[in-house]
Image (tube, rainbow over all chains, first blue to last red; front, side, top):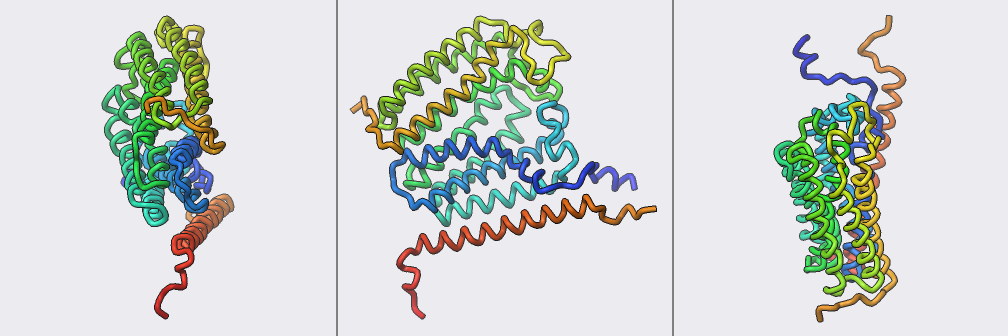
Amino acid sequence: MAMIQAVSAPTRAPARWQDFLQLLKPRVMSLVVFTGLTGLVCAGTPVHPFLAGVAILCIAVGAGASGALNMWYDADIDGKMRRTRGRPVPAGRVQGADALALGVVLSMFSVMLMGMALNWLAAGLLAFTIFFYAVVYTVWLKRWTAQNIVIGGLAGALPPVIGWAAATGTVPLNAWLLCGIIFMWTPPHFWALSLYTSEDYKKAGVPMMPLVAGASSTRKQILIYSLLFTPLCLTPVLTGLGGPIYLAVAGLGGLVFLLLAVRLFRSRAGDAQAQRKDDGLYDVRAGAKDARNLFAFSILYLTLLFATLLGEHLMRVTPLDLLS
Amino acid sequence: MSDPARETDVEARARRGRNIALALGLVIFVILVFVVTIVKLGGNVANRPL
């Protein structure tokens, strides 16, 4: 009897189909669809609309599958954090084994369909992205190093490359530029957030940068990454990817991004005095406002960059090619 | 006294919802593969020995 109790997790309510949908992290899926679509459109190669739709669906389902695998493996630490304790597995609504099965099955379906409908380069990149997020990031990096979101950010940065590969069967420099922009955006974005939510990560024992290196060092690293990230956002106008509207958006937005990063660097965001134990998850103390501002603007800036590229290519705006 | 092994109404409703979602997912997948096949083959769809 004790054995049965030990192996079966408590189930408070029966699993509904919505719980399985929640395992796929719909919000993350929508972001991945957006960046994957940008890569597919920017490739500039005509693709049958139905096949383009299938490619985006495969990217979305692949991202969802890796989300389910992540929720299966991380159920123990998810249960300790306010932000994640309501997720289906730690809340007991879905058994861990069911989340694992869903993740594995959807991974295989999405990769096979991508290979059959588009090409095997895109399918291979999708498989690598799922593996990188579910195994390299979730199992290895997340609990081991403060560089977890830096290296793990590659998984979130690859969807435009997959979209590009789906359209053309190749991955040229411009595809990797889109990947690089998201990759370099990830550290300032997540570290700004973790400066005012690190208490939650502390409870779960996740080595986020503010907990390992301290708030001051994190603010400095955010500034360094911002100094690298903002010029990188301008490079698409050198390589025939971005046009004049993109140049204006990336330039002006980049200046605002840098300004907010400098203000965060000079603030006391994340310092112990700036937080209280009874703070709610989204309560922000005065000292942490600069962190919240950069976090919020980083989302807007990345969205604008990709929306502008998408818009320019759909409207056939002639891209700048300042290098040639 | 109710039988703890017996499915409650809430459990039955949840199971029915899961089954319908799974069935829909499978039907959509079959349709996707069918249309992808037609699109990929295009005009060659009938070009085979009978």
